[in-house]
Amino acid sequence: MMTSRPTVLVTGGTRGIGRAICDALAADHDLIIGGASADAVAEACARYENARPFVADLADEASTTRAVEALGLTRLDGVVHSAGVLGNGALTDLRRDDWRRTFEINVVAVADLTRLLLPALEAARGTVVVINSGSGLTAGGPGGVYSASKFAARALTDAMREELRPMGIRVSSVHPGRVATDMQVELNSFEGREYDEANYLRPESVASAVRLALTATPDANVDMISVRPGPR
Image (cartoon, rainbow, N blue to C red; front, side, top):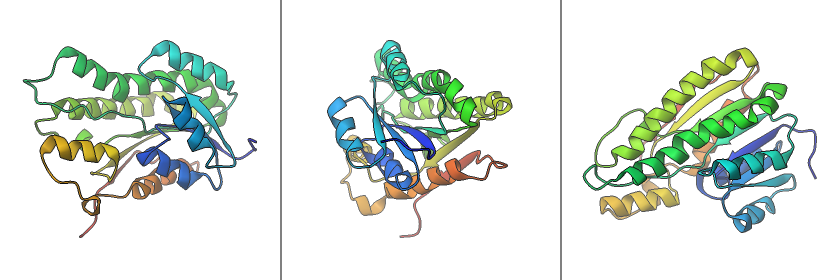
């Protein structure tokens, strides 16, 4: 049962950083948990007293639009764009479809879902948080497609921050270093390295930064947070 507590939609909320964000917010927020798999979303929602599903293929405009309409939101205190894809490969190996898939999820879906949620966000003077990456601050190859998408997401976030400010909507960008998630396992495999989660940030550390952006006092906008691994 939903309550009068702040409501936050978290895309990619069934695992990794998204799941850690839901855990960090559940005590004092109502959650809308997003994912592409109805079963995974239902399982995630069952973990909390106040959570409901948002099942959508974010790469598909019609699917995303239907899912937003089904929510029937009149106000939304925050949206966290945690869903993302890695996009591996050297420039010589990538084709147009590889670039399109990565940009579709990491950039286009963020812009489109935010647009669809604007009336509810404006009603609540809400906050948009985009999970970016250290790769959105510096780039190196191979793997340029991921960095390019995250640089684009950073530009999008900067532009949204200024465009949405007159509507009372805050926009934050969170740039984690390497995090111990399934994506990191995939990246290590691509790089030919053995994965050891002790070498990376915990998802909970990123979730703490997201919570800070969402719960900052109304006079403040947390523009950008870079979260790097601490001393080992």
